[in-house]
Structures are given as structure tokens and as C-alpha cells.
Image (cartoon, rainbow, N blue to C red; front, side, top):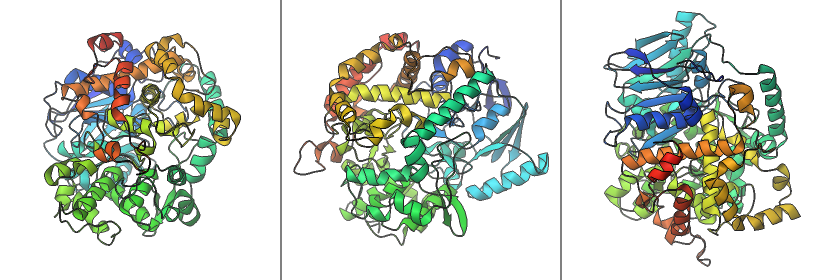
Length: 640
């Protein structure tokens, strides 16, 4: 269905894998206005299909691959696309965001999204070229690791379309084929890593999808779009976080700051500091291993590192991998982290869940709950273990199920570091209460980004009181809604880092910064009003460029208040879908280690005061005491 809005290609395609039937999926301009694109669009489609009885590996599960209206418009860091489905790791809605080039080329093929249903009878890879959808046998690619699979795809595309064939692709590795519950989907070196979306591809016998085409991605006012994008690029390059810290050290640059503030998960979150952090921090990675910085398409930040592994230049580890595969398991060998990061990517496996599942197993062994031969600080058997997980051999078959499964079988749920089955990121939340709340209420489980990333207020950007619960629920909702909308637009969440004026970062001891840090716990009432009535903010904020690009590129009116409301709609919609699968307040919990055991034994406040914040959070969102969106809220947000 063609659209009056630009930025969109105006077509959503449904693929029935069982019958190989290709059909138009109806998607109106009214739905574009309400659900924008990306993960919000996907949540609406899944909401329309899921009743709450579906199984992740069942034929009735659906995969939605969706782009945003800014994808391909030249906006900063706008090459993102989203994969949503029912997660085999959590049993609830999964949304996994990815860079790479596939989203851009899907739009070049003429499509905003793919809705994939059913299951292929045989192992298959799908080629999309403008109006052509070709189902190829994947027998010769099945069993290959990511780089070999991508090489084979390149050969096939060049043989069919010439040496200069331009296309985007996604594929899975052995972990996805063997239904490892935290298998990823890769696009180049970028991963849709979380919640096991790769295993759903494997369950449907999909090895890869390519997309190519010659469509022009339209913008409403090309001159103003280009002018605003240049201004936005310039702003990001000047900001201390997006123009200095991330380009200079990547996300790994946060390790030292996290160490200083007790935020660095160490020995399966027993501690918040790692005594060997200097051996495995961003500075060491930059000085001893980094070859060159890289970035996704249209990205001015270029946060990716490049390192050498086995004589190849490959993507280096990001913060989560670096923190969890170093201090998380008491490993101080950075070259091993580089090697494992590449190995896990090659196998098509989420490094966060893999690392946390491993650290759980090490502690379970240490406590005598499960004698598995895995020990903190012992690294000589880990490389083989990753292969065993991907191919489900020996204890790898059980580790492939994730930490929640293992803790329910062997005990130790209090130190199985997951929420709703999804393992936590590397931020230790006992010194960041708001981040702890975000983990607990996150729609996809223990995610720092879907949780709102409040840690940026609690030590990694500003330095407000990390242990107080005051105003944290209101900030969590606001940040979640903003980040929901950024993802739905097709942009990287790192563009949100520049939301804070640069001087607050560069002058941490300045009077204005100190005043801001002191004031934050006391402005919950003001944020509550904004969260309840966002449309009163019919303005553009100078530090938030995301709203003004919409009328230029998309021909869609947008202001800060509407932007927040769209994000709120998406976040509540995901919760509404999850409630059909039984998610309630009882699932919004953290492992007891984080709520009951102080990080600092001399300071009882160094736990996450979760219950206090949850009540305020539910009230702010218009959810009932059981954490379920009320009918009034669903109607107010035009969800029902």
C-alpha cells in the first residue's frame, strides 16, 4: 500500500515459507503515524497475530524484519533494522536491533518490512531482488560458520548478478541451526544478537536472506534533509561522548568509568569492581590491539574496533563482551577476549548470554550444585566449550539453554543473572538503582537499552545519587520511551548520548553540573507530568535533533511531545503482547543477589530498592498493580 509519507517505501511483504506464497501485508498510513516502524511496527504486527499460546519453535511463530522511516535517508547512524519474534530464550516478545547494511538494501528492494510465517520444508536461503523472491537450496551452506556462509553468498550473488552486485544480507551460524536459545543473526560483522532470534531462523530452516534493488528511497525535501543532517553530524562530532569518547575508545572506553563507580560486573556480579581491569579496559584495547575504527553506514561516531585474530582483521569486542568475558569470569587476558568474541560471532551466538551462562555454571560448580569442570579464572577449556555449545555436544547441550534453565535444574536462581530468562548486560546495578529497575521491567528481559539505560545519569554521564530510588521510575519511563522511538525510526541509540549538553560531561565539577546532579532526584513530579501529558511539549529541543528531521525527510509532523508519546505507545504495546504470555509484576524481578545482598557490606543502601520503584513506575505508565496495561491506557494510546 503506497504511502503519502516519504522515507517509507510503502510496501510490507508477507512470506509464507510453507507454500512459498508472497503477498502484500496491509499497512496503512494511519498505522505508520501510530506505530512508525522498526520494533514498534513489529510489535503491532505480532500483537495482531499472537494469542498467547504460540511456541517459539512452532510453525505459528512469526518473524518480522522491519526498517524505520529514516533508514536510508542519510540521517546519522540510520542503517538500523529490527528483527522481532517470539523468543526461545524467554518465551515472550523478542526485538533485536542490528546495524550492517541489510535494512538499507531491503528498502532499495522496495520494502519497509518482511512478515515471515510458517516453515521451509527444506534448508533454504531467500533472495529478494526488487519484485523477485527466489527460494534457493541452502544445503551447501548449512553447517557453515558466518564468514564462510557470507563468502558463499557473495559467490552466488556475483555469479548471478555480476562482480559488482550490491546487496545486503543476514544469516545464521551453527548456533542458530542447532537451536541454541541465544543464537544470533548476523549482517556483515554486526549482530542482531539478543533473545535467540537466530534460533527461530534455524527452526524455520532459513540460513540466509539477501536483498537488492534499484528503488530510490524518497525524502520529502531533499535540500532541507541534507542541510539538517549536516548540522546533526556536526553536532554529534563536537559532543564529548559521540565525538570523542566513542570514536576514541568505543564502548570499551566505559570499562574504566564503570570500575571507578562500582558498576563493572565481576565474578558473576559478586562484585562491582575488577582488580585487573587495567589489563582489559578500553585504553589497553586501543593501545595494544586496535588497528582501525569502523562504523555502520551513515555513522559519524565509528564506535567499532578492529583487532587481529588468527591473522585476520576482525571486529573487536564491545563493552558487554569485554566486561563479561574478562572480569565476569575472572579472565585478565584481553587477547583471549578478542579471540572468543570473533569465535562467538563466527558461531552466531550472543556474547552476553553466552558469557553470563558460563559464569553461572562456574559459580554453580564452585558451590557444588553442578560439577561441570568450569572454574573462575580457568580459561584453557573455554574455546572448545563455545564449539560444544554451538553444536550441542556434552555439557554444551545444557549450556545452550541459558542460565534460567540451568538454575531451575541445578539450583542457584539467586545468582543466575537474568530477567525473564534474558541474561543481564555488564552493568552491575547495585550502584545504579535506576538501571536495576530498567533491567527488571524491560520488555525483552535483562536488557540495559530496553531498560532505559539510566546508568548514564548514575555515573557514566552525569553523577546523580546512584542509590536513591527518587525520580528513577519517572526517568526510566522517559528514557525508555525516547529510546523506543529512536529504534523505531531506524537509528542507532548512540545518537541519544548527545541528549545531554556537552558541558555537563566535560565539566563534572562545574557548578551547573553539580546543581543538575543534586536536582535530579527531586524533579520526579515534573517528569511525571511530562510522561502523563507529553503532547504539551509541542516543541523541538536544541539538544535533540531527532524530531526536526521528520517533517523534512518523512513529511510527518513531529515534536518532542509526540515523539515521546509514540515511544510510550510502542513500549506499552510490547508489554500488552507479553501479558498475553503471562507476564505480570511477579516477572519484573532481579536475582536476589542484587536486591538482598549489599555490594558494599558496610553500606546497606548498595542494593537495588526494586519494590519501591516498581509501584511508582507502574502508576506512571498507567499499568495496574500487577504490571498489566489498563484498558484505559490502551485506549488512550490507540492500541485497542
